[in-house]
Image (cartoon, rainbow, N blue to C red):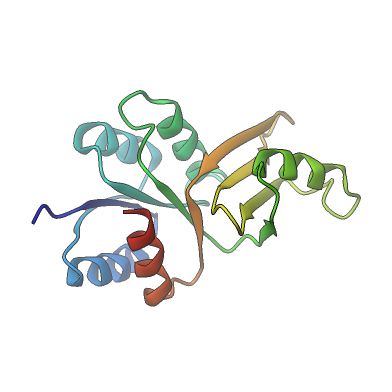
Length: 163
């Protein structure tokens, strides 16, 4: 059996250690990185079957930046991405999560949020709408979100559903 390769990117050694142990125990091959540059280099060289990215590392949005570069890279664009975050995820049953994020931006309750994470409960499509430091709105499609702290059962369930 071909062991699936999973890239874990986090700046906290304890998180990497815990996730690695859980995944390796289930037969996955785990590769790890602690920074954006290291993650991108590994992703391009190893082309993992899935990536789990922390959001806040050296910068507040480093994980989003990694996801954006992976999505836009011809060799890495098909890698499923799970964002590991404590940011609240907004759920919708709309078919276009991108349009739903834009609608949330119009709602006074959400207009000032720097980050909006949206997941369609029907199709499973998900994405990130965030504002860069210069105020530019960026959309990044991702495969899903993992809530911090990591729940081993949910981690395995999400990964199995994507692989």
